[in-house]
Image (tube, rainbow, N blue to C red):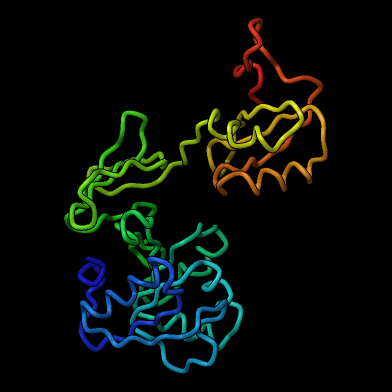
Length: 264
C-alpha cells in the first residue's frame, strides 16, 4: 500500500536506517522485496546520511535523525534530494516542520503503530499539498468511536478493528487529523499510586498546543523527584505537563476526589 501510494517502482533505492528489531525497519525491507527496490542498509544511528553522496529515492526516518541531518550542510543536501522522505516514530514539532516545508521533494508524516504493521496513512508536510490531514491508504477504513477516538479497520493487516486513544476529526474526503490523546485520569492515578507516597490527584488545564494538558496536584515532596517517578511509571503521552503543590487535595464530603474543584 505504501509503495502504491508513493509510486515506488523496481530499481528505486530505499535507505534502511531503522533497527530491524522494530516494525519500522522490518517494513522497509518488506517494501523493498515487494516493489523490487534496491536496499541500502546502514547501521542505525543519529546521522544516517553521513558520508552519503547520492540521495536515495525513499527513506524512512525518525524525527531525531531528520533534525540531526539538517544541522550538517552535506547531510542536509542529501536529505533534500530524497524523493520520498517519510517521518514517523515521534512527534514532529513546529520548528522541524518549518525547516521541511520548503523542501523540493515529498516529505510525509506517517500515522500508524505496531498493531497496524507500521503506518496506515500519510500527510504531506511540504509544498502546495501540505496539510494537517492524513490520507488513509486504499482499503483502510476509518471511523470515530462514541468517545470521538479514531477507529481503524485495515483488513489486509488485521481482521479486527483497532480503537486508538487518539481523539480525531474526519472530513468529507475521508481524511483525518488528530486533535489530541484520550487520557483516563483514573488509569494515570492507578499507575502512579504504588510509586508516590504523598497524597496526589491528576487533573487537567487548558493548553494552547494540546487543548488540555495533564497536571499533577500533590501535597508534599520534591518536584524533580516526582517528575522522575512519573517518567518511570507512565507512558510518555500520560506524563504530567505541570506539577502543582497545594496544601490539601480537594475531596468531596464522602472523601472522593473533587474533580471539578481540582481543575486548574
